[in-house]
Structure formats: C-alpha cells, structure tokens
Length: 102
Image (cartoon, rainbow, N blue to C red; front, side, top):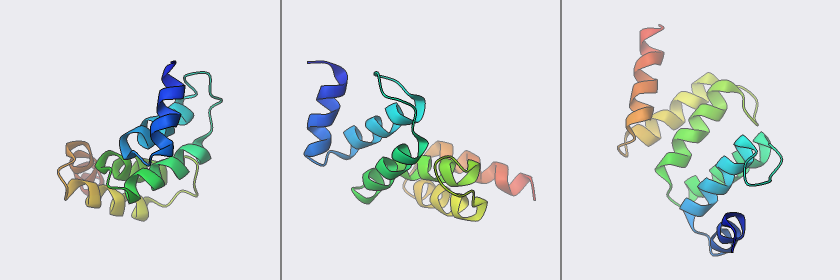
C-alpha cells in the first residue's frame, strides 16, 4: 500500500499522529495531494483535540502566519504556550522569539 493509503486508514481510526501527518501532506502538497492550508488547519485541529502536541504547535504556526486561517498572532501564541507546557521545544523557542520582539 502507498503512504497516503496508510495515512488514510489510520486517520479513519482517529490516530492523532496520522491525522497530523496527513495535515502536513496537505500543507506542503505532498503525496500527490494538492496544497490546501485550510484542510491542513482542520486536520491539525482534529489531531490536537486527540492529544497531538505537535499539532498544537502547528496550529500556533498557522495562526501566527495566517496559514489556512485568519492571522491572529495572540491566538498563535496561546497555541505555542499550550504546546510548550506539554514539552514542545519548538513552541518554547517561538514564545521566546515573541517575547524578544516586544
């Protein structure tokens, strides 16, 4: 089976890691999928609701940059904080950069 089929099978079983990876595939337009940042945002949201810390960080990125959603830097920082509080190093770094810009 190809990678996309494997993702889709695991997504159907509500696997947060697979949902995150499918979101990344839509974000980057890989595995034969057309780039779709809105769909990526939806999948990141679903993965985060199922416990994916990386998805929280990706939601922070989406809000901070306005990728697939209306730009809202404050909301992006909230998602970075949620991810950082669960040990996500990249989100901690992003929060540090936000603080440094103040």
